[in-house]
Image (tube, helix red, strand yellow):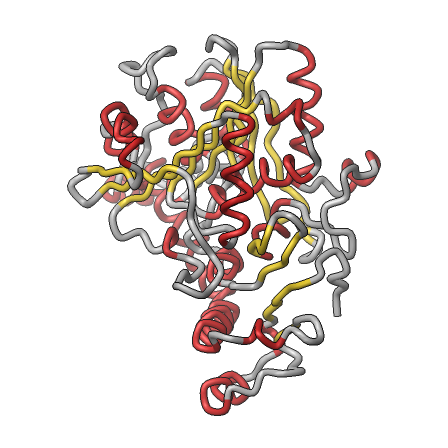
Length: 403
C-alpha cells in the first residue's frame, strides 16, 4: 500500500482490488469501511458518503480495465487502416496498389502517420486570417496545439517547424511515479514572431482508445492539500505528484533527468527560457485531461510560491476540460488569477461528456471555475459570466473554425 503522508485527508479508490460481488455489495449494504479497494484516513468515515458515485466510479474503472487490451488492439489496427488508406490515396487506390504489389505501409513513427484525432481533422496550418495582435490569436494557437499534441514526435516536429515556422523546444513522455511508467505526453514550442514572444506548453488529452486515460477521467479519488483544497488524485499523479513526498518545492536534478515528471521538467525549462528574455510570456493549454493538467500546473506553481513564473503566465486555455478540484480549490485558484492577472478560458462543445466529469452535486467535491465559453451543436456560444460577454464576440468563430 502506497504512503499518503503528504496529505492529511484523502479518498483513494483501487478498482484492481475489488471483485464484482464486493462492488455490488456497496449498493446493498453500503459497508465500505476497511476495504482493500478504498483508502481514507482513520476517523474520516464521512469521506465514504455518496456511495452511488463511488460505485459508479469503481464499476466504470473496472470495466475499462478489462477492456484495456481490446481497446488498444482495436485502436492500433484502426489507426493503421486509416493511415493505409491515406498513404495509398483511398480504398480503391489501396486495392490498385495491392494488385501492383506497391502498397505503401506507413511507419508509426513517421511524419506521415496520423492519430485518430489527426484523421478527424487533418488541418495543420494556422488560420492566416488570425494574426498576431488579434485577440483570437492565442486561442487559435492553443486549439491547434491541443489537437497536435495527440500526434507522434515526427508529426509535431514537422508541423511546428515547417508549417508554423516556430521552434520546437521539447517533445516529452513524462514519468508517472505512481504507475511507474511514462503516461503523460506533451510538447513545448516557442513563437518568436509574437510581440511579446510566447512559449506554449501543450498537454496531450484523453486518447480515444486509451482505457487508462479514461479511468483517470472517471476516477473520483482525491487528496487534500493545506490551503489548496481537495484535488483530483489522477491528475496530480499525471502532472508529477511524487510517492510519499507529494509536491516538494525542489526535485533532485539527477532524478529529473532519470525520471522526467511533467511539472518539474517543464518548470525548469520555463525558468531557463524566461530568464533569457524579460518580455517572454508563456501559455498553458490542453484538451480533455490535458486541459486539467494545464490548469493544475499554475496551482502547483502557486503552492511553491513561484512568483517569477506566475507573473509571466499569459493565460490558460483549455478545451473539453474535466473538473479538477473542490470549492476550496476553486477559491484558491481565483485568488491566484486575480493576484497574477492571467486569463483562464474553458471551451466546452455541446454535449461533450468530459467537462461533466468527475461528478458535481450540491454536497460533493468537484467544481468548475474560470470563464466558460459553451458552444451548442450549431456553434452558437454563450458565456457563463455576463461580465465576460465581450470574449464571446471575439472568440465565437474560433471553435467552429478549428474544431
